[in-house]
Length: 340
Image (cartoon, rainbow, N blue to C red; front, side):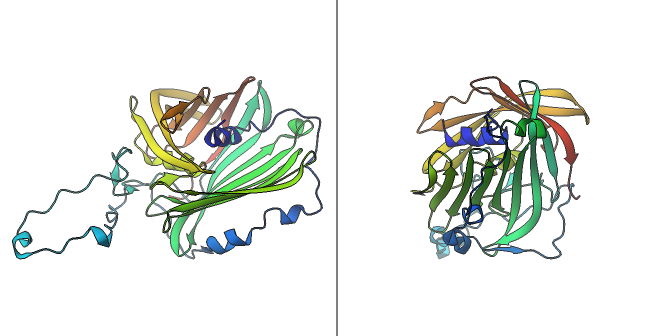
């Protein structure tokens, strides 16, 4: 199973498998599991005070992505009068560029304070809640960045069988839309898990560190370092990055994702438009289906679908994933659209 598939299943509460345990795993050094000095040194996060909020209306076109100095040629006398070159296609060229100016979208779909909470069901029974939220902007290593957050918590009934209280965070550069980091903290009946991952775009290197504690195997840690391919997302930032694209039925979008030593391409089929009735009202939506390609080979993911609002925001309103046994469905429970 690919790492991206695991991330999708995490987002769909696939980790809520039935077990005999009924409370979080107890461990005397639980507060030390997530400590990683190298990560704290590599990712310096500061609050941005008095940050103006994003607007729902179209924004002024951002400046094009700067051209590397090594690519700029000095003009001779004959070259000075030459016609200006046509603008270069948005990078990377495997991505669709409709609606973009350089790396930025003409209209930013993300809002500080937005929060989508889903009731996750398994075999028709409520397994817990999943919340996708956008926290206040921060500076990461001196660069303005989005702070995307996911929280999974099992319901009281499901916690009688298996308890889950997981969170994941990623920081995404505002200008380049590239992730700085990825972090997971999981507290479950059978395990405690901490994951730290850093994407260094200056050195084009990434690393992922994981520490896991379980009753069966005790405490284990591992690390993986690898070379990044330009313009790669991580397994969490991908869910927000997808919202940057124009979701036109019939299109197949694609972008790169890197995780735990693997460089992948995610292809997203924009399947159809659909009017979706929910407890919060009726939404005009676009249905999309992701496919993962590793090393040029498509990886089976089962049937995973997302329903997203058919507007500039592209908010998630329903999630459906078939797994080995049964189907997990996330129904939108509450929605906060964030500041405008």
